[in-house]
Length: 346
Ligand code: MTE
Image: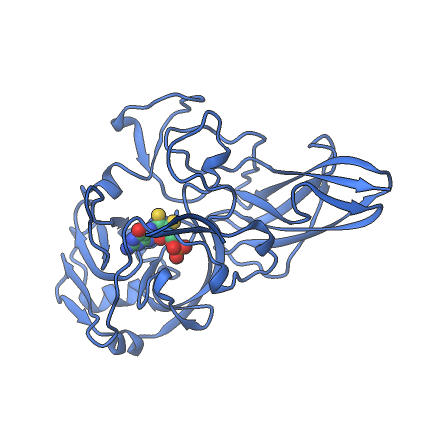
């Protein structure tokens, strides 16, 4: 893993590990603002309260008694690719690897809310995890609008790729908000409060926001011009060959992954001449609304030389990756076509 911080851990997945549809747990990127809590499974409780008729306090065993559903979904940090923006933007300099795909299993938030009975005035659910504010860093708290919380794929996950959630990824329970930025996927979640308004704390009211107009490189926006991030942009990344690889004349296997946030991937194209001509890559069989799709291609290298390979994805909403990602003050949603250089040796 590429280590951005070792405490609390911020770990990036090297792109060569994007070679399988499910990202193995020990290769899955990690992002946390605060030291991770040690949670005792025996005393853990999830509280559902606020604007509900019957507040709930659920142990892990109670959560396991609800119907358990599997949701394959890609988790991407809003700041993935920040390190590629010019001019440079402060914050973690993620390159391309703050993204991974897993099969999450757990309880539908809608089932919990049905049991609690949501009052009509409730518009948001505010989720808090068991990590707490430290020094100047505030507590990590996020609100999710009720319309998304009630979606059948929004779950409190207890498992990741068939194992109990690892501590780094939120043991024993985390919120899964498919298609939305990773910040909404609150780890170690033990509190869900229903309210008419969203949280006023730093991580919802200030951070993870995007200007509602194009500010241009180095530009700024006023707080009232910033909107909460929700669905992720359309992206794709090569996993093979590696940037600056040397290959032999002949068939060069090319592969990668593409993700469209709340939209399915419908097409991935590959160019071997820096984006002048494009050909369709072959899409992988796994095709789920909120999960990335793998792609493969064979580049027929008939002549020695240096080649710039690009990939660009299209999703079911008709969004196509741009050549340049739109610069924004916090460096979110980087999604330029991926671009690598390879040398074909004679
Ligand atoms: N949940 C808590 N409680 N604390 C955090 O700092 N970080 C969020 C989210 N959930 C965070 C959190 C962010 S910004 C991201 S991108 C994802 O967790 C990363 O999830 P992962 O570490 O499982 O990859």
